Image (cartoon, rainbow, N blue to C red; front, top):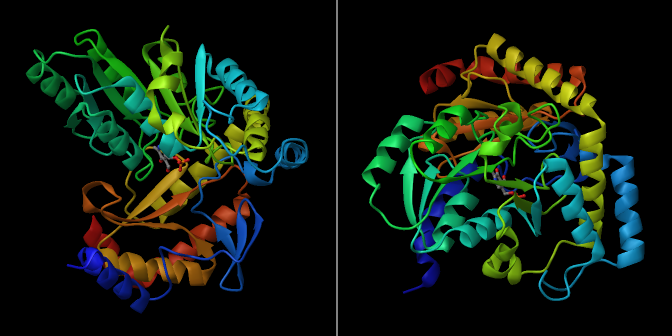
Length: 402
Ligand SMILES: Cc1ncc(COP(=O)(O)O)c(C=O)c1O
């Protein structure tokens, strides 16, 4: 039997996608002009589907820091953190993040994906149980599997469901870890953190929050959902990525536990991969300073999110979330409609993410927009206008999605 025969259905699905227009899952950006503009298909296009929440990718100080690091430390570390991959700058970034996050310990990983693999497999083992929200990001699912822990999925954002499942598992030996996200990446909704924290008084568990999409954005200082909710002391472990509000690549885990540092020696995704390059570490370190020093970035992203959200509501679009966040996801009836509309949006001059099952909750098809502090009000208005043009002929399909 041919090993790849099992992917025949993927080939069929991809062929259908191409027959409906461009390659929605392999789009080529010919030239990046700014955090909010690129040349796509020979045309200047507004980017409304990146995770460049703070517009850091073109920040002059970050670029300068990256160039300096290239000159002074070279292109890569060529080794893992426990071997030759820990430079002074990796430890300096851990210290800067520790100060910013107000957590005693921070471990820098090579990507956000690996931060979840590394933290979850470092925290939990085969004798433990991880309770995870059903809508968790794939890196959380994969980290749970890697840990070998028993997995219990609870209904999305439903603390009562978690309570029920914990009661059923009350006699299970081993430790318990509950995993939530600050802002969920597909729908843009937040975990009702206070409801979950209330359960900590009833059940004994550790709480980890992945603040990938909320870092830099939520809370007065941008420390994420836990800061916004005033519940940082109740969150035992924080995970985050450098690939969104910090505009680079890498990730981190943070916490105050006395044995936290031992995760470095218990986590294969930390031990067996090369550490982030000097340029990445330098730009991220500068970007963290910017998050601390420029609260106006948070004001800008909140204003822009509000403008896009209200504009889409005004068009009668079916949005996946009833609170405003930088992720604004439009529900669409089915895959062919999503592909058709995505092509029309790109042809109209705006790039958004197309999000399809199995990468989405409950088999939904989405046109996922994300807002940047770097968008101008005019760019947001233009995105809304292009959606209006595209939606008009497809209104029936959108209504069917509701
Ligand atoms: C919630 C969440 N966690 C982790 C990650 C992984 O981060 P990275 O893409 O930086 O590896 C993502 C990426 O989208 C995410 O949405």
